[in-house]
Image (cartoon, rainbow, N blue to C red; front, side):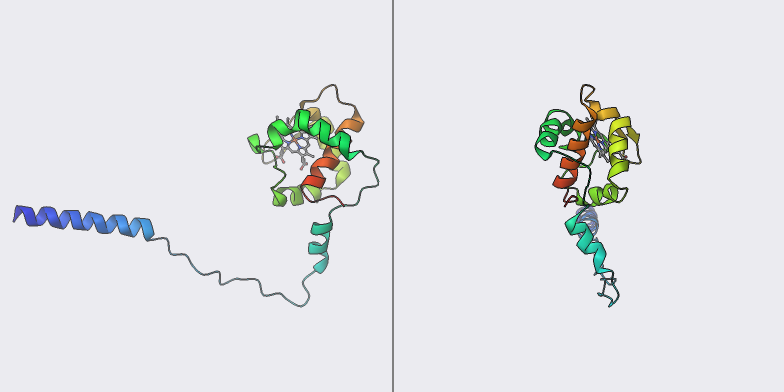
Length: 145
Ligand code: HEC
């Protein structure tokens, strides 16, 4: 009898494990967005094409600055910094407009994700260096034409 109850307990525990492990009831995405006729196509077109910039910039210099300073946080996405590949985050940032992003990069910015230090830690960078680096980031994030 004792043996039997041990078996029962083992069985019950086994069942529990199975239930916990495979128990995620993945609901099928019922809200799958049916493409409404009046879906603003511009949003997609815009997010693919990115912002146009009339601010003079040099992407090669931006890349050099980025790879020296900004990459430390932005490559791994440390402390809330957006990675290149994090297109959603760059979408969110790009929506603020280039002048705001440049201002944030110059002066520093405490956002909801973390803290961007003034000049992204590149104290010897010129304003133009920062402008270039921000353009490069946006380009990599798919948000610059
Ligand atoms: C110490 C880490 C760190 C370094 C170094 C760094 N950043 Fe950032 N950066 C952040 C964080 C964290 C955020 C996210 C802030 C938020 O939105 O909460 C951010 C966000 C940004 C944004 C988006 C700002 C916005 O308003 O959405 C830009 C542009 C940016 N960084 C540019 C740069 C540039 C250019 C450099 C290099 C010159 C740089 N960063 C270096 C941490 C860093």
